[in-house]
Length: 228
Ligand SMILES: [Cu+2]
Image (cartoon, rainbow, N blue to C red; front, top):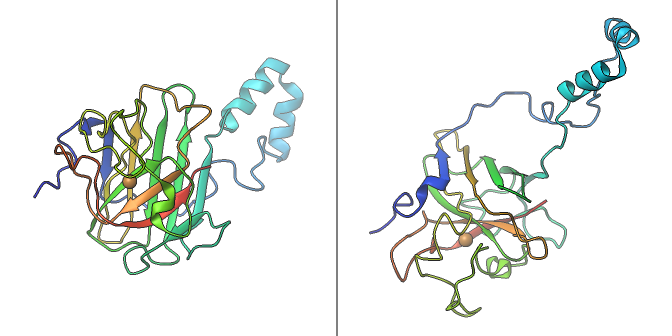
C-alpha cells in the first residue's frame, strides 16, 4: 500500500500532529474590537508625544499590516452558504472547526490549515480544489494545479505524478493528535491564478497517494471548506 505523502515533492507539506490550544483564539489577528492603538492614558500620552512617523511605526507594530485572507468556521451539513461542509459526519463531525489562511497569494502562497474536533490519531488527505463546495464532494472538481496536466479531463482527473504532486498542487495532508486536532501548511513558489484561483479545500479519507496512475488520489471526499 502506498500511503506515503512524503515521497514526491512532499517537502512542500509540513504536517504536524497537534497544535497547542492557546486559548486566545480570535484575539491575535485583528478580530472584532481589536483596536490598532491602545486606549489607555499611557498610550494617549505616547501618541501626543510621538512624531507622525513614529506613530505610524507604532501602529504597524500593533496590527498586521495586511492580514491574510482567512476563513474560520464550524463544519455543518450542506447549505448553499455554508462556509465548511461535512459529507461524512462520522469522520468530520458537525461542529468540528477549521481555520484556513492564505498569505501572499499573488507571489508565494502560504496556506495554513488548523482543525479541531476530528477523529483522534487519524490520517486525512487534503488539497485545494478548483471549484467551490457543493451538495456533494464531487462539486469541488479536480485539484488546483499550477501547471495543468494536458492529459486530464473532467471525467479523468490528473493522476500523473509529473503534475499531481505536492509541488504543482496544494497538498495539506495531516494526522490528528490524541485530541482530534491537527495543523498543516504548504508554501509554493508560484502565485495563484488571479482569474481562476483555488476555490475550496477538500478533506479526504486517506493520505494522498503518489504512485503513477494513483497520484493525488486520497479516498472519499469527507468535507469541504470554501476559500476566503
Ligand atoms: Cu483532493
